[in-house]
Image (cartoon, rainbow, N blue to C red; front, side, top):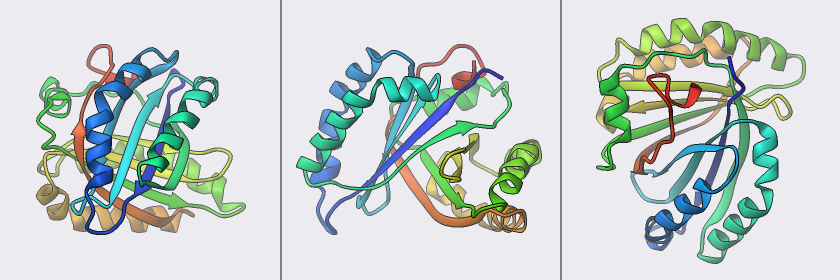
Length: 226
């Protein structure tokens, strides 16, 4: 599998204020244009939680080196967001462990539409010490079974799993038709979390986020993993 990295950055806004979300929405076209000129950038999604208090950027890269080479632009973008009232919450770079998957054309059509009606679920896991290798190995070996289970859930579209080999953070990034479908799948998702915990991965945060925009750069049915 060709190396692929996901960068997840989350911000928080003041409770009851939609200034941060408005800023991100209004600046999105400019940000996407700048990212499109950045070597190694493959696509991205921007989203917010139901209350508009958590904002997230999930971007896809050809390598960790590509992310590092873009550090000046990423630093400037972060400073601009902080200047507009957003508070940096989390910033992780994850190498995907997901094997290439031939997604259904309808699934790609659903998450690449510009209706911003789709939802993104990000589940973060932490590991400690020797458990890191065990958790990462299990994440890698269990993705096929996890995918088979998720494909049976109503409203599930596509999913990715990543691991930060330096900090130990792991994450499951899945796309759904709506928040209601995520809620309906809760029993199976909780079972999957329990299985991860038994293999050294402890859930640290779960975000359910509504997509602001779904600009994707991908080639063929395998999408970002091409």
